[in-house]
Amino acid sequence: MFEELGISFGTAIVVLIALYFVIKWGVKNGIEQYFEEKQQKNKKKK
Image (cartoon, rainbow, N blue to C red; front, side):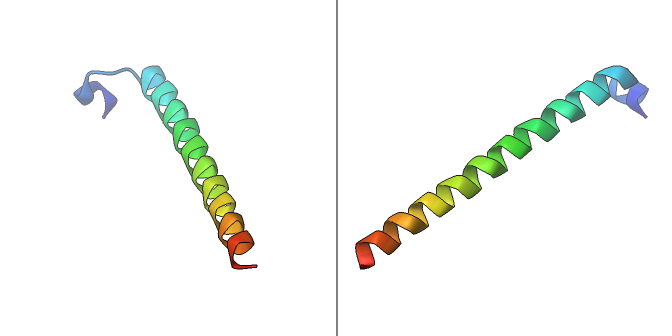
């Protein structure tokens, strides 16, 4: 399957691992930003 795409199995594993960490980092930052905005809105309401 990987040979059809023109990449080796090792390269595919490295790309998938890198993609995993990029997505993990993005989701973590998105969740942190959501809670920061939520806290700011709660402070304004009080």
